[in-house]
Amino acid sequence: MVPLLRGHLWRPSLYLCLLPLLQQVNCYVVPPADLRSALYAEWAHYHWVWLSSDRANQSSMMQYAQDYLDHGIQVGAVDLDSGWSTGYNNFIFDTTNYPNASEMVEFFHSKGIRVILWVTSMVDTDSSNYQEAYDNGYFIRDIFGKQSLFKWWHGTGGLLDYTNEEAVQWWHGQIDQVLSMGIDGWKCDGTDPYILELVVPIGKGGVVTRKEYSDAYYGDFFDYTRAKLGDDRLIMSRPVDGYDFIFLDFSPQRVVFSGWVGDEDPTFDGLVQALKRYLQSAWAGYPNFGSDIGGYRTGNGTLGRTKELFLRWSQLGAFSPLMENGGNREHRPWMFDNSNQTLDIYKMFVDTHYQLVDYLLTTGTEAFETNTSSITPLAKHSSFIDKLIDDFNPDTYNYLLGPNILVAPITSNDSTANITFPVGSSWIYWWDHSKVYQGGSALQLTAVPLEEFPVFFKNGTFLPLRVTPGMPLLGEAGFAGHLCWLLHSPSMTSPHASHSSHIRQHQGPGITATYWWLDPGCIAIEISAHPLVNSIVHLTGLESHVVRVHTLTAEGGWKPVGEATSLEDVRGVAPAYWHPVGGTSSVFLYPGPSREEGHRMDVCFGI
Image (cartoon, rainbow, N blue to C red):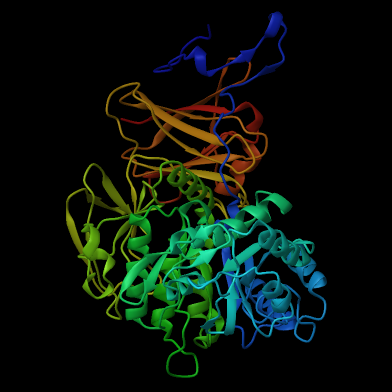
């Protein structure tokens, strides 16, 4: 047993030396977490960009993505909009616009950018593969047994019959033409509701309902692509969107790890319409989704949308599971003014979105596992009447993003937000940690600066943030790539009562962070071992200065931790801690790079 310092609590179950047959193999301070892998790849939560079909081609898309990178904005995926193929939908690249598609895909992958292609299950009559499909009876039929044709926004075509196994095998052969290039997924657009035009749709397997058809369409693109190329592949598809006068569930919930809520106008009313679909999608149990930043459609003026709308929608995107930007007219943030204000704000919010990747991946996975959503609306749900678009006017569009982040979207040009804070916790303003609001209280924010967005995080709970190069303090001090565990006003419900948070990983054991009060003056913090990820802890909202820190070694001894003179110096003298200049309410604790062993730090305050 090691000697105890003031308040140290020895917990032998947490400091495991693995000694099979009394021979030491490995020794941990805190053993690795053993969390189930996340169900999808984290690029579902990256920043996606795209150009509308009238402007998209190989050179423009490559330049578009490069322009974002040259402006210091991270890009995680591009979507090639409709028009990339010679026919809808024959899966043959139009070499006039895309002369070397394989080279283009390799270019994007070399930049760390994933590639998805627009698609539907409709085959147009002028597409090169239509006649073969028609001759073999591969399309949905009407009640009289005739293969049906549908007029849609890209022509006239037939819907693939997913109940016909031979048709599906043929379809997979068509798809293979582009899967062989190593693409990363699909944007599956919403032609499935056209089946409602038939009184009784008939497939080879019998009557097909609209829902059955939708599930087969989206599910097949999702499943087949992952079966061929790996479970890091995704599709982008609608969760809930409007159809005529009602809200309609499009995709099956199980495929919506990166959904978007359809095409909206580039106005604040369009933003509200997107939020209505957020709420409907959340209530329907869709895990992850976002919306076209700035609206898909075009408006007046050379830009097609105002700077203020574009920024407020960008901020909404940053605090949504999917942040994606594209559509008609102008969506490049550096084109909205000559002062770089829009660019700088947009860049900051993209950076913020990347800080949330681990949090969002964990939230999305656990939402899927519990048949819920990453987004929890704070509005009341009134069952059937909420499905009628014109009658759906919720009392608030505020929502929880995961369990620990509260988002209050700005829905008008007056930059006002009204918030009633959920009970059970106090809430910290994202942009100023000195502003704390009690659960159950109400707040009206007016004239919110364009640089800010009404977001709050829960007090007393670890919030995992991935350190990005642009992250204030930590990013600037060279900690990019680390995992920062942000904790405001650690909660002392009772001595030794622990509070834990964790992240799930698509490939990896995950990481847990736990704290508990040893006594009123000392707190213990543990972080599980991990082979790749280094952690740093940021405590805020403290009432007194740190006077002593000790860390536990893998050998079982306690080692004092020194105070660094700057955050940059923390890395050189680790383990170390550092108080920002000018106050005692915040401290950074860096246990050092020995991530494979895990970390235990006991922190004592002057009281």
